[in-house]
Amino acid sequence: MASFNRVILAGNLTRDPELSYLPSGTPVCQIGLAVSRRWRDKEGNQRDEVCFVDVVAYARTAEVIKQYFQKGRPILVEGRLRYREWTSKEGQKRSKHEVMIENFSFIDGGGAGRGQAGAGAAPRAAEPVGEPEMPPAVEEPPPGGEDPNIPF
Image (tube, rainbow, N blue to C red; front, top):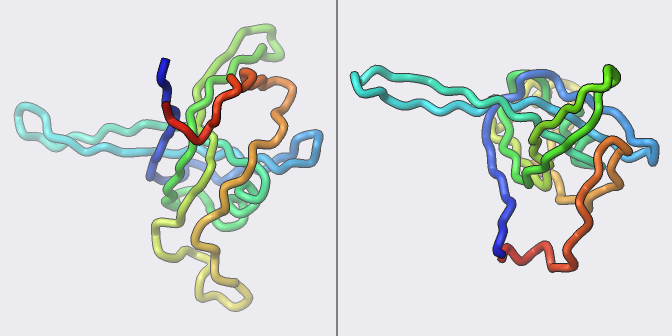
């Protein structure tokens, strides 16, 4: 059966990036992203719909996002959708979908850090990175032995 898992989103951060580290020392950055859609209803009134998405980055990508982004700043992310399941401290089963960043771009042409003394130019985009080992609470299904670059 053919499958394809690719997500491209552009939106604004809903909170400051949260950087933490796996036991292996790999940086992990979690962000919230608000993606808006504007449309007109049957009566011609303009309506807005906002979708809130949890997004995760690893390795150097995580560090760059933490360094150059803050709440409200726009970002374009490209990655894949992942479904996670875990048990909370209270013993409840939890689950959620999140986007795993494989690449991202700055889309506002600058930012608060540009033009200030001592602030270097922000990089234009992070390099895609290999997937690091996952934290114990997250288990990826084993690869099917297929080339991940072939979408079918």
